[in-house]
Image (cartoon, rainbow, N blue to C red; front, side):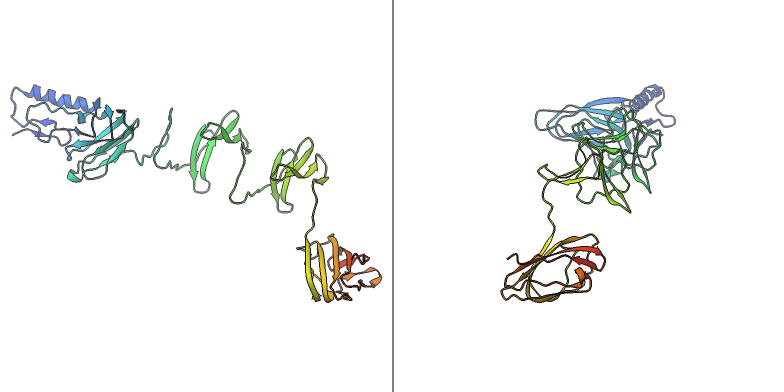
Length: 399
């Protein structure tokens, strides 16, 4: 019976009664193959193509069949001027490799990649300076090279260097209190980052190795080193505290809360020119506006008949009378609101003002306006309560 050969590496299986007295030579050849299967080889590349032979297509009886592709760990070296495509042959051999691309640039525009192929199926590209664990499926003309660790599932990974991925890093489990630096996930919490350090438990840095955000050790306090900019809203969910340096908070009763502490002011609001607009002196309830406080004023140049003033939108009103006017009862007044109603006669004059029942005057005397054309009268008001607007004495004839 003639010898047969294993599919992957061409190890010779001597037929019964064959090679009498020559078994030692064939066995040594086979042991040389097995030695390569468990060893490492540096393979030099040049140009843009290379064939990595795992076994001869038709190995001969009693002949040495040693190939570079028999090594499981291969480091590709050599100076390249372009990407190099390494074809694993023959395309019917199945095998795995641990590959390192240690090639150099020959002086053009590298460094360059090593592209592993076996047939018309998928290829694997190993970038310069990177390593990969791959296997070839030996499927003939349609053979493919597959990344053996593209969907690697590990319970624990400990790395002394960097972990780099061209895809996503997908955590599947929760972190724990004792974790030094962990990324985790739960369906309720989403992504979880857990750490522990002597100063901070979590530190996020930028590309310049400068801290952007930190979480102080053993606390829930988050410190942002630079500015916080949001394309949406910044939504505070809790109250502030007396010791806060500069805090935005919220409660259902108080709404937005600003709390701070400084040697001169506890709260300071500035404009875009970095100039103070409003401040609250340290430890007091005294607020100071640096500039002029302007009340919203409604100027209406044509008024006749019944009109209703909008006290929500305006504090003061300048009304030109083009006919007799009645101030109808409003529904927008706020208790404590105060301002003035300026009544301007048109070119005809003698326009009168009547009042709804919510407007009150001293002694119920009502309001008598100046009658001259273009006369200007000022009526002060104060909202004592809902449906109770007190009108002061008319200041007449400013014109």
